[in-house]
Amino acid sequence: MSDELFSLEGKVALVTGSSTGLGKIMAKALGRAGAKVAMNYFNNEERAATTFAEFQETGAEGAMIRANVTDEAEVNRLVAEATEKLGPIDIVVLNATPDQPQRPIEEYDWEFYQSMLDFFIKSPYLVTRAVLPHMKKQKWGRIINIGSEVFHLGVKPFTAYVAAKGGQNGFNRSLAHELAQWNITVNMIAPGWIPVERHENDPQELKDGYLASIPMGRWGVPQDLDGTVVYLASEASGFVTGQNIHVNGGTTVH
View 1 (cartoon, helix red, strand yellow):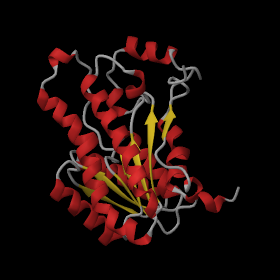
View 2: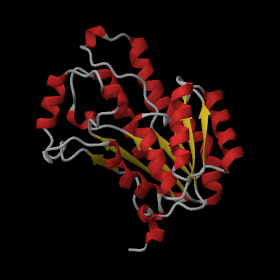
View 3: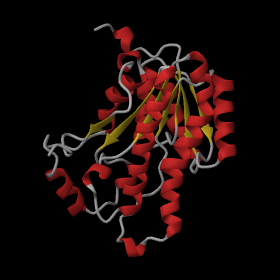
View 4: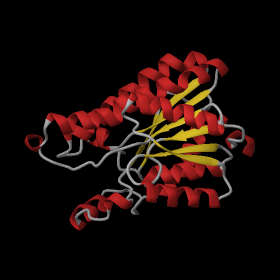
């Protein structure tokens, strides 16, 4: 199969929440495939600067832009700034996420539930709406939601995060149907538990239990997402839309 199918030369991508974790790795993968990449952060300027320096060392072209992707005005500014610096956005990876503590339902309050909905439904809605005019005009676009296996596994005690990710899954499916006529694909990547910086202090017994549940018998690493995100962003997946691809070593195979 020709490498041209997977080339992102001439494309501009936006990856929300990409100064750390899985977002950082996916942004680098898109850059290596040839895309100009608008990276995004909100809280830690020093970490974002370090990440962007690492990105530039790969030889890819991009920009690091601070924005709160749950705020409408901030999202519109983010898209406008990315467009000014790199060009109109062709590919969006909706990855931004807050902390995700697991608690019994009695220990959550609505404010926390709302924060999950803001990151996993409001933010995808705002970012998608902001980039659609260009995608519709050119009749080409790639919208990639980052979901989670937790929705399919019904992980406990985790109702707020699982419910919001379920809502994002529904957003993904309905939007794929709506935008297909413009040759805009909408797909979701559902990673398993892939340890990144925010998992450093997770209890060892939880880690041991999860590892034992992975049919492939090893932990996933962030780079396991490289091929999937490039595939869904490229011409190679042009007839694939509304799908949810699990990258988890088989934990959702039952």
